[in-house]
Amino acid sequence: MVRVQARDRWVRFQRRLAPYLFVSPFYVLFLVFLVIPVFFALYASFTNWAGLEVPQFVGIRNYINLFRDKTFQLALVNNIWYSGASVFIVIPLALFLAVLLSANWLRGREVFRAVYFAPILTSAVVVGIIFILLYDYRYGLLNWALAQLGLPTPNWLGARELKKPAVIGLIVWRWTGHHMIYFLAGLQSIPQELYEAAMVDGANRLRSFIHITLPLLRPVLLFVVVTTTIGSFQIFEEPYVLGAGPADSGLSLAMYLYRVGFQYMRQGFGSSVGFVLFAIIFSLSLIQTKYFGLFREE
Amino acid sequence: MSVARARRIQRFPSQVSARGTLIKVSIGVAKGVVYLALIAGGILTIFPFLWTVSASFKDTAEMFRYPPSLVPPVFRISNYITLFTFSERVQFLRWYLNSILVTVCSVLLSLTFSSMGGFGFAKYDFRFRRLLFGILLGSMMVPFHVVLIPLFVMMIRINWVDSYRALILPFSASAFGIFLMRQYMVTIPTELMDSARIDGASEFRIYYQIFLPLSRPMLGTLALLTFMGSWNSFTWPLIILRSPDKFTLPLGMANLLGTWMGERLWGPVMAGAFLSVLPILLVFVVMQKQFIAGMTAGAIRG
Image (cartoon, rainbow over all chains, first blue to last red; front, side, top):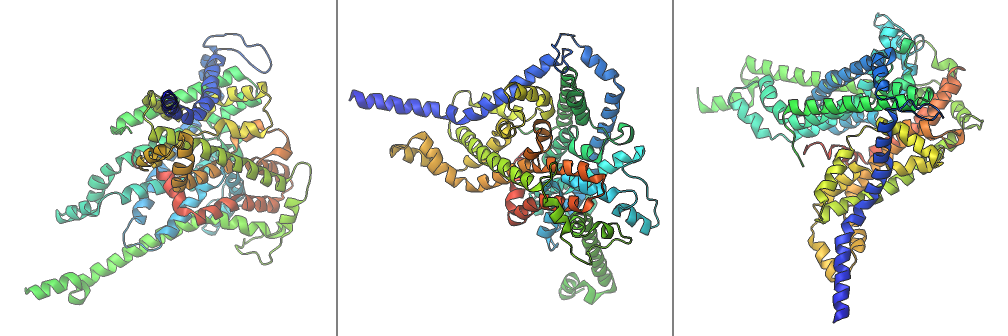
């Protein structure tokens, strides 16, 4: 009798312990490879640690120097351009394509979907390499096409004013299809009856778009805008492969961090860049979520 | 107007009046414009891929010929031969195998840890569950670049630099993966657990022999997403890997560019680019629905 009770207790104990054991791999890795490094970075950002030297505490001097650094300011401005393009060019374009694709009379939707989605599957580095060839001043296909149309054929990768548009072109090519998929899913979840009811009431296409579609797409829109903003401030591979360009005109914040922390080996300063990046991303996400109003918790 | 005529106007407008014909034609034109826009966009999107394949079969003279041609007059495989010829700095086949190794390991570990974590959160009500899940979600908000430098320093300290452990292990349990698995497992009836327990199964057996097999669809999706992330990963391998014979594919391709761009060896570079994107495009074509389902899984519900 006692043996049965003891075994019962062991089984019950196992059952209480089980969930913790199941989730523990994540938390162990999380602790070791995320939490500890984050706190270490925090400490490092207040030191003058560089290369193999012994770090010394310097207070907020890194942060002050950071905001004074001309290259950082340039990277920040560049990145704002990249984010702006990601939100105000890619997203409306993706929404437009999704609306076109969601027409119920459309044939071949699966094919279109696959074609538009394909770019995001590939490595940004490999695609960047392909685009270097396409953007080439003398032999690139883009300039060949422009020449056929009688348009100017500038040096996309070598001119200071054109470096960012060139990178943005790559971003638009890569990300439009990806966002389009999200919008497509969102559009398809809006019940048809709403549109029919609106048409009975005499609303035209544009009005039903503004007053039915957009409000009901709000959760998806919010998700896409926030994740796009977060992602756009961490852009690294696209500008890295296309090159920061003449006079750092294409330099992104993540590239700046890489340069400072790994090429110049200034770990303390680099850590402060990381936290400033974190702060920018975090506050933008907060503002956007508040502005959109809806934040549905799980 | 009779009822019959009114109905005829509604269903066959063009047969009844000129205005009806105008409406029908303009709807047709509008549809044509839509198709045109979609096809034009599609061509622009697919074009870089087509060009890469085409260029990989041309030699240098043909590639820069004016006017350029989409289909090469002669299909040459010399670029591919150059690509695979062993040399100190270019070891394409090696890089390919390295990527396969790292990706397979990453996928296996990720599936394991994510399904375990998802199972724990989905099927148990334990103290701290809310808190721990909140931490899980919060961890997704920390950008990678914050930990980039200290993580690298840590790798130096524990001597994991230039190793595959450093590539695979730190990211093997993904919060997003656990989130996806949890969402899916919640829909599997809990009664299965009770009957299994009555039969004397341990908790781990319940996970391994009941819930894991039943979660195959979501496991497939997660495998695809992990495969994509690992195959294309560049930044972390760039920082961690030092010896060229250990490079993964994206890193190798960037190296290829640096080595061969000066010599204008674009043909082999394009061949390499094509082979790099081929696996993932093939997998996508076969498993399109699962791919897209996985990516939109978190978004719609908010």
